[in-house]
Image (tube, rainbow, N blue to C red; front, side):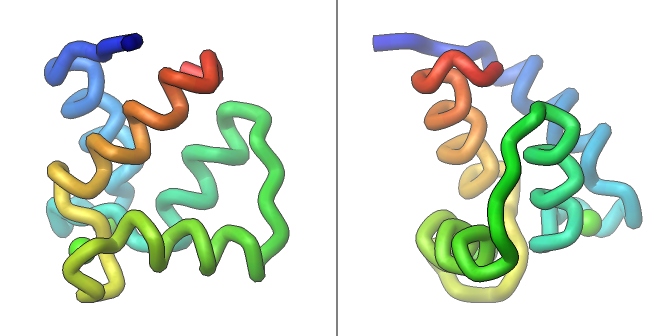
Length: 78
Ligand SMILES: [Ca+2]
Ligand SMILES: [Ca+2]
């Protein structure tokens, strides 16, 4: 199983938390995926976001973001 170190995930989190609220919102996630060359339609992005936003507060905490990073890493996107 591919692993990714926490430091790298935290760096990405800080880089893409453009407004500095310590959360990744859907727009920030979109710019991350766009930067990585992943294109999502707005519908599939919203669906994906809802899946990874496990507590449903409309933003990704570092823990939730880690799940995203791990899945990108598993798909060799990261
Ligand atoms: Ca943010
Ligand atoms: Ca959340």
